[in-house]
Length: 153
Image (cartoon, rainbow, N blue to C red; front, side):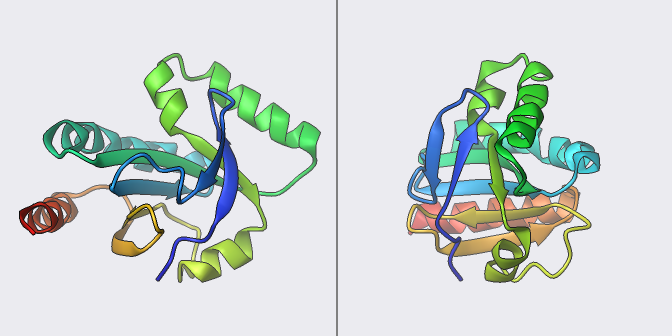
């Protein structure tokens, strides 16, 4: 399965084409679909930051996926998110995707946007690992096992 080629902007206003714009050879991408998902995303970020320190070539991103609206609506949404995040590193790794959600979800075989989805992709977009929902101990262990296997290759 491939992560589709999409264009978005991070909260530092840098336009990015994904998946080629991901910095890591392995990238943890947390897909969130609704504002209420922020607490679920936040459950992943401490581990994501720790893994970035432990594994060279690993990067983590938060991707709010928002149904495409007018440019003014997009600006308003992005500005609101930017204003609410004081940490520059978090703004850099938060890339907002304003797009037609159903085809995007279909391309990643996501049948329900009621929870977040965490996927690991390489720079070509190959989906190598995935989970849904908040981070729990078994999911964290599974992700670390996956990374250890990949780094021992």
